[in-house]
Amino acid sequence: MKKGVLEYCVLALIATRWRYGFELVEVLGSVDGLLSSDGTIYPLLSRMRADGLVETEWRESAEGRPRRYYRISPAGRAALNEFQTEWDKFRDAVDGVLRAGKGGRK
Amino acid sequence: VTAPHGDQIVAGYIAQLERALASVPPSRRAEIVDEIGEHIAQVRGQIADESDADVLNLLDRLGDPVELAASAPTEEPTPVMPGGGGPLASGWLDIAALVLTPILWPVGVILLWMSPSWSTRDKLIGTLVPPGAVLVVTRWVTPRRHAGGSRRCREFSRSCLLSPGSFCGSRG
Image (cartoon, rainbow over all chains, first blue to last red; front, side, top):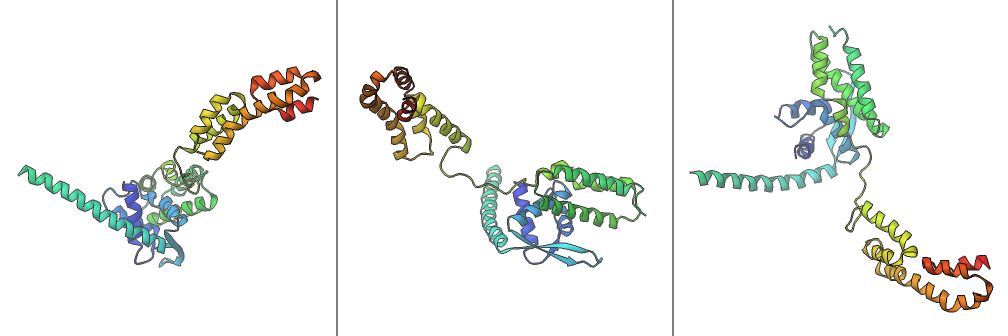
């Protein structure tokens, strides 16, 4: 499940602006348990690019070396929206069950 | 200050990664290796007094090359065949039905009707043509050939339930 969720977290992070791979690792690495290892993100980005979920562009960085930047594609946006709907439903359903469990213990 | 063996350690890691990605299409492999090389350069740039241990730690966090490669698909995803049964199962049924229908007609017919690959019309043809052909051969073809000494051919065709019009003809 984590692996599937990671893909949508990447899409969410690049939904509003271009980011480069290392930047994504830094942000996602700060979320506990999301990255099994720092490198996980790179094969994932490559696959998402092949699947047409992300667009890439080389850009000059502040340090002078060009970097590959990623941004969500229209297909990626559609996939993210679909996931958001499913996730909201799933989260609410699980929350409901957990709350019912707590209520029963009172 | 860079680690005394930093570059060597990194080169070894990249070589391992390239080997692990051998089955990934070359353009995808280059993309992944490039990005991971860039990641390593970024992290190393942030370390002030770099030691060999720092480099090893950074590679540990990056992950085992074989595990990273395992999460990169080796080929483009293949579409799933519609209509029940795995492709292997239906493939075996098809081959078995093709081989067995002429030889062991009843077994072949059962397999033929089990296989999802043929339409009802094909299945009817497969079921009716072999016995029909034998009937035709024994009724009309063999009496004329009776004197021609092709008995062995006829017996062979009957025992195997082959439809042997051309088979016997080539002997005459």
